[in-house]
Length: 144
Picture 1 (tube, rainbow, N blue to C red):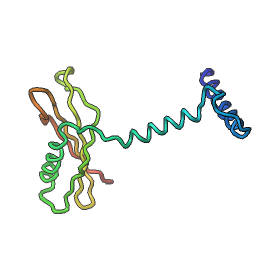
Picture 2 (picture 1 turned 90 degrees about the vertical axis):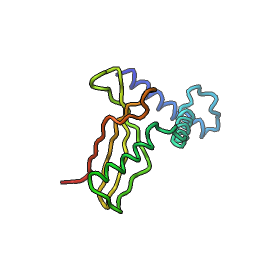
Picture 3 (picture 1 turned 180 degrees about the vertical axis):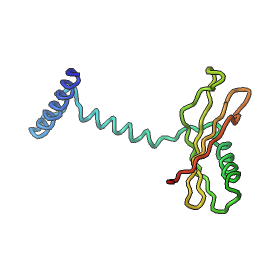
Picture 4 (picture 1 turned 45 degrees about the horizontal axis):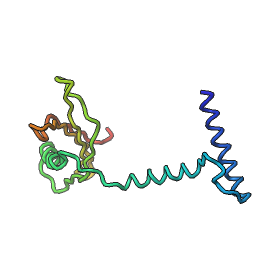
């Protein structure tokens, strides 16, 4: 733990030296561990990666269709029902019967008037069966 603290204080000292060097008019090339530039490059990569378009999630159109059916099944047809178009892929879960297989879990949100509903759909996706629905759950987000 002491080595990590020493590393942190060294980086802070370098930042202070670099700020003093900027005021004195010297260049950054004298310091090989240019912490500020590395940090700014990291922030640039982090910011641009959030704008990248993600690949389509397999089974997402089926999950959106099934979400509408599931809400209608539980609450009946309602004109105020809306389904979010975003599908979030959650970490996959193992098949309890066969640990070598894994299921994909997709999450979709739906709304009826002021009620919010989280729906999760569990799919098995293989070459023989594409998007085979294995389970689904619905949970109303409310305070009792």
